[in-house]
Amino acid sequence: MQRDERVMMQSFSRWYPVVVESGEGSYVYDIDGNRFLDFNAGIAVNALGYNNPSVLEAIRRQISKLLHYSFTDFLYEQAITISEKLVAISPTGTDSRVFLTNSGTEAIEAMIKTARWSTRRPTVLAFSGSFHGRTLGSLSLTASKPVQRRYFGPLLPDVEHVPFPYCYRCPFKMDPSTCGLYCVDFIADELFSKYVPPEEVSVFVTEIIQGEGGYVPAPDDYFRKLKRLLDRYGILLGVDEVQSGIGRTGNWFAVEGYGIKPDLLASAKALGGGLPLGALIGKSELMELDKGSHASTFGGNPVACAAGLSTITEIERLGLLDEVKKKGALIMRRLSEWKDMYELVGDVRGRGLMIGIELVKDKQSKEAAVKELNQVLTGCFKKGLLVIAAGKSTIRIAPPLTIKEEDVMIGLDILEGELKKVSQQILKE
Image 1: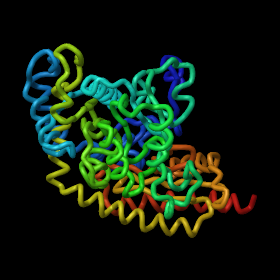
Image 2: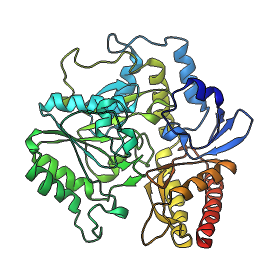
Image 3: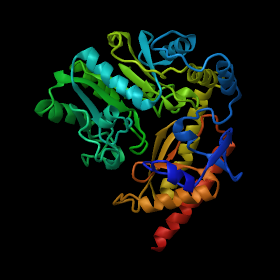
């Protein structure tokens, strides 16, 4: 840790002092030999856990042939094969094309450029609470924490934000059961009617389930209503599936659970099977930029493509999409009980294995339990469970998709023990 502090810029946050050395299945090991159950999956990257034999073999085979030769300047089969697979599973439809990148933020940058180029419109819409990356273009859309934007301006012009449908903390202070999804009406009645000409908007970029914003899924009917509004004005819908994609919610992509087809889709994280790989997938008529207008030296690296294709193939072979839904339902049943049992638990939400537990000091005021959250996370770490947070005070549960049911219960037992302990401390205070 001292070496790290001496030589590395400390512009990131570490949740607790663990130095990871290796992993196996749903467990990771630190340099002292301690074993930890992983509820993070490397921030939703390691969909198949650690040391998956098929992925390792695919990497070994490719390493023995070719490490790199820039697919945007030349051709090689690995980039084409994984792109074909992505088109086959993408909700954008089979008449789609792919641009491969190294990361999620690069995929969002490509989305912004593609939308502006194909529509000839400058304005981009995004949600408050969103996280789309930290490079300057994607950062202009990100709006989950002030520290992520402070002193980096001026950012990309012609970007506007509107409230996300965060029903537990409705930005309009309305009752979700009777509001009629007013948050969509707000876009038409306020944004488009008063200061943003809709005919100048190229794309609305959105997470389907907000990640850094607190693991917040939109209501079931929200995106259908939003898509109707966007279609009225010829505005593209671009979905950020960097964290929610590649099986995390029990579908290949979370947007499938909302019954709509996006125009553009960004993927990364789990896509590379642990190696850096991202992708922009879009309808073919949108993906026709001029030659030389957008490229990437390392995007679509053949080793990362081999690992990514193997990951998708393994998810199919193991039937993990159905398994994720079953395990997610199991977790949600148990967490729903915690809402009644512990004053600290304000809300539980999510889909598949992308689940949030929002902690509050008081269920009536909903004051965020920030200090208590850190106590719970640290307590879990000391008991051998790695779990982190999102938003102000939400525990995020995102284990490998391959996690065994008995390991799920072990992790939940540890987590409940720490929640119970901290809840009792609150009652004493």
